[in-house]
Image (cartoon, rainbow, N blue to C red; front, side):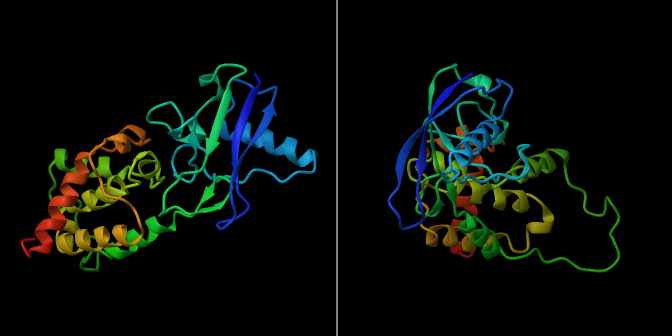
Length: 248
């Protein structure tokens, strides 16, 4: 297979960016999108040119490190899939593919396709810790939790913090990410003590980082590789509002 790649190149955070066209050939259908970019970089290095910078780590859809906007869609055209899980067989031979970084005020471009997503770390840090007694390990069933509640908490905990929700949202909102991180704790008794304080602090930090407001477009849910439900946003809003009035 062969493709024409229209790739965003940017030397640094303050530099002006531009799209550059490249041709790649002999791409196997079973190659992942990142493996295809590896092939492009090998070609560029052999030509004495600078390789395209992009993020990757596990390449198994687990870590959330990879993140590209491909033909206008965060992580590409396949739903419930990270960039590293996307295969080249999903594209027609000879097609043109546009590759951009995640674009948001809270995700400043570092170089080429790499963005700084440390804002997510600061939002998590703002939530603080969970208070719990230390000592010997408690019995497994010391705090009974209904299976339905535990599964809802686990659904939210599946968030890998990739930032696709931000890239897909027309307002660059991080509400789905923040809602998921709050919901995974607020449903469980272990997270109840700081529930209200955590919601207020994380929402305030999200706003301070420059992310936009949620306007219920639902693009975040559609782009999420772990299919986090947009319902977590309503729970986040409820907890933050109740806590701000001292009712939680």
